[in-house]
Amino acid sequence: MKFFKHILFLPAVLLASCTGILDKEPIATLDAGSYFQTEDDAVQAINAAYGPLLLNNDNKNFYWGFSELTSDEAITGGDGSRPGLTEMDAFTYTPRTEELNDFWKLQYTGITQCNLVLDHIADIDMNESTRNRVTGEALFLRSYYYFLLTQVFGDVPLFTSVAPPDQLKVPRTSKATVYAQIESDCERAAGLLPVQYGAGEVGRVTRGAAYALAAKAYLYEKNWSKVLEYTAKVKGLGIYALMTDYEDNFRKNTQNNAESVWEIQHANLELGVGNFLNQWWASKKFEGYGFAEVTPEFVNAFEPDDPRRKFTVAMNNEDYFGVVYKPSFSATGFGVKKYLQPKAEVTQKADGDINYTAIRYAEVLLWEAEALTELNRVAEAQAPLEQVRARARAQAADPATALPPVVTNHQQAMRDAVRHERRVELGFELHRFFDLVRWGVAAQVLPGFQAGKHEVFPLPQTEIDLNSALIQNPEY
Image (cartoon, rainbow, N blue to C red):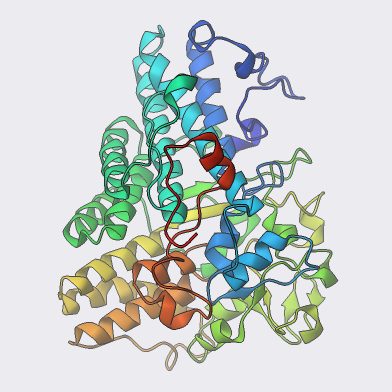
């Protein structure tokens, strides 16, 4: 049974479960020094640190809106009941947009929980291998929360221990310093974490995830040599491979597979721990909210006979989880398929149990291809790029003609090919807007995007009101 099936109904505090697995009082009501006494305390505390990762209703985690609705992959559908989502689509969000405030608080909830663990774990009498693992998990999770914060807001306050209330009003830390902390912590975490877990612990952070997050931080800093160093470390573990069937990455019974490097677990237990994209992205004709509708531009980006289109997007007269999709199902005529499930698989629409794979091995290969391209090692970039294309080609209706290998000696041609491949391989996996920003092309691609402003989102006004040391992002 998945490890997270047991613990992810605990958002930021430890609650008693209906199955009796955890029976501690809420940690928020206890002095942390008094609470951390045993190995079980430490394990339960790190379990709770996973809670803010969830794309669920309880968390109000609209990271997907920042990454998809602002991009050229989706527009906001639905009934207009979430004005913040419409603002993202139109680039009219403000410091008072609710989703930004919720996201900020959620990430710092996770960071605080990680810091609680790191502050106290050395004082606990416990098995040393468990101490190492829990420490590695906390270092990674804190790094991941900070990575998301810098993606969304740029410079953010950096806390590496639990600060008393009178020391919380601090200025923002430069993004470069935050990245350096992420990279250092991931390297340390990798030395403490196992390469794999037994079946009962699936979903916990692994060494490969730590190496991969470090690689992604270096990618955003354009430190291409370090990207290659850390993608090589991921590959060197010898446990990752592309699945033969691309769609196995998005099926309930084929999750946590060989392609999964960092997968955020969700469960359909009618307890608010499921993936709410199953409802938020589904068409209103399929008992969903329809809040993300696929753009024709994204559909047209796929090459002829690219099978990934049908795995990612539903269109006229195609199967849509047991019903026939029609153009009337969305304003654009196209619907998202990733992270959606048939009705029979879930007991509550908003509690889908398709996990969110934040890092797939296919992306690691594309990072490698991108880094080689930017170092002008174009011929070498062809190999990792071809691995990704070859998997898709093999599933095409006519593999003999579909998705021909990219063969070029020109850096810009290879750069265009790698960027294209990221778009079609990773569509609706919450990467596109941030890719356009880091490539410096968002203003050319996205109507309404203002260079010098929209590369980052505004800091929540409530945080600025509470902390006079915070300075708002430019133009907001």
